[in-house]
Length: 121
Image (cartoon, rainbow, N blue to C red):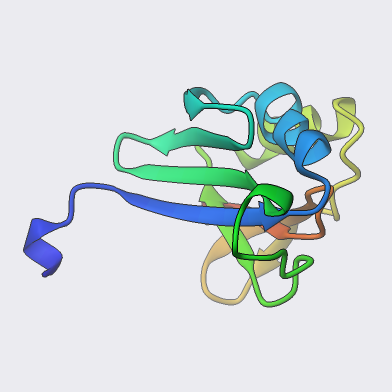
């Protein structure tokens, strides 16, 4: 099956749908690939998507941020951290991770953890 995969998408079902959409669209400035009145699909890379769905309009319900960490690799961790601070997101401090990366964490309005990382040199 792996050879046939074209894109991947993580769908987050949210109680605070409008606030969470605004966080990914307006605060993180992720480009919108598709949207309607209860679902937004954001582009993370040419082959990866992140979607936010209103749990009030879906059969799936919110996990309230439990058990999910979204990891996003960036080119410049310091620039990403500065952006997060200026946007009022309240990231954790940048730290070195034993597996050879520099990283910090954020939380979206629904409580999902987001790890922003860059490989160490």
